[in-house]
Image (cartoon, rainbow over all chains, first blue to last red; front, side, top):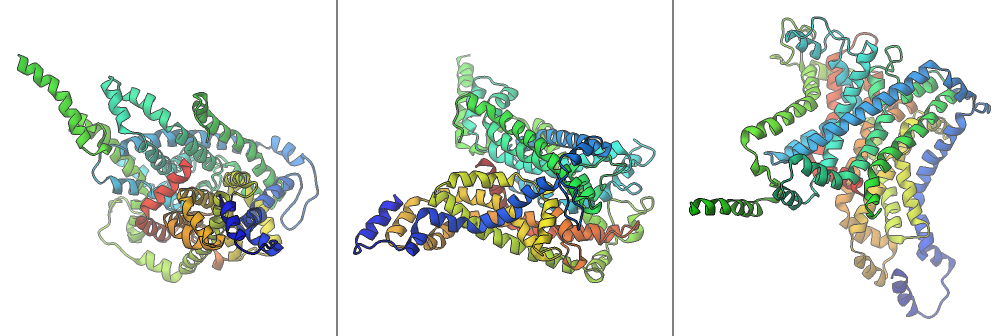
Length: 319
Length: 308
């Protein structure tokens, strides 16, 4: 259509071969190239090239200030016997699984609640999002203070209620620290899940629910056979993002525990930071972060295809 | 007897008529009684809200509490203070480099956002409207770029930043943040550009407008809501970014708020909780204010991009 319009305009002129300059200005493919140039330049220089470099670094013994020699799979072989690395893999899996599942459950529940008839609906929705808006590091600092070993408000409240006698050492004990950081992650992630699912819920036509109720469907059946199937595509996307962000989380852990106590909360991201930037072993750190890629791909695949399957099983369009 | 039956038969019809007249968003909640709603709706909602908001309350309260009340839970109730003080905030603003960090964050976020939106507008327009050879393929690649997390990139990127001579300058962040922002805002703007009727552009083309003129004079004014959404989202992400700022900046005077609070404000074993909380609160305020004005855009940006 565009070309026809252009041609009819050009036809009115005396016949003239388009100069190379005109070609560069009007040819679709050249124009596409010009328009893509700024984005492509940044993404290639600062994303694609470093990504490749990171994989290459993981096969070298590079240190800060010294470009490394190629040493093949040595980094990975060494990591296989490194108990701290294995612990960080375990922590990452635990952190991602528990936090994602709870975020999904609470987020969906909150979305369903917010979808009800409520006074001050708009304000409520806006307020729910605040934990997601506020920079993670700043809310992590607030949690750090809430989890303080001596002056934790949670310990104080529980003691006042007579439920415990001694302060809880939230960030000092390995398992306490794990659950505490997971809780902070859930706290931050729930608003995102809730608001996105709420947007999905609002596209579901109320007449479907009315029809189902007239047919005698229970609330659970209405959820299971109307809400859930219609929400599946959006759940797939939200959970993919949620798993991705949880798996690669760095900020919360680094601010609250720096991987401690005794490496109990080290995620793969924090461990690679510690080894590469603080310890100076770029090659080893790069190997740890490269090792995240397969896990990440698997997690994305599971949450994407696992939830999307419904759609193409039923012969729906895969657009 | 017949009257009662007639009454019963009429009741569902009346209920139906009521719903069709009422706002559709109400759904069928008219079926629930108030006590039931209290337990199944308001109570859980109240608990979740309280948990979501408590850290902010605690943050704000700590930042105005006098020091002696801060750590003495036996004498003073920890949940309230009757003598608020601005000492912590004053100390933060006038005795630390906090204003410089705020300024850095603002500058870096603004520049990175502007750069990303410029690049994304061009890229999104080219992918959606120019349909050059391979456009769809490039669109897919850009979406994949969004899935590459900073936690994987920061090590090689730190050597790259060093190679380019950008280490410990604001440019290190201004140029690396767009790698997170461009994929997202391109995706978002592609959706907006698709909704603009193509006929408008055709008419302009026939009238002899160049592609650049069409983009600036027709497409962009129509895509303002999309641009605002992209702007807010980019700005929020920049403000929130931590790992690049932590890795690429070492001088205190170039640090951004999140990094500076963690590295420069925490000294040794003595945590100045009052100033720390004040710093966290003031650091969040610009975003909360921005967000308060553009809530709808923010939500539509987040959900719109997910629905794509």
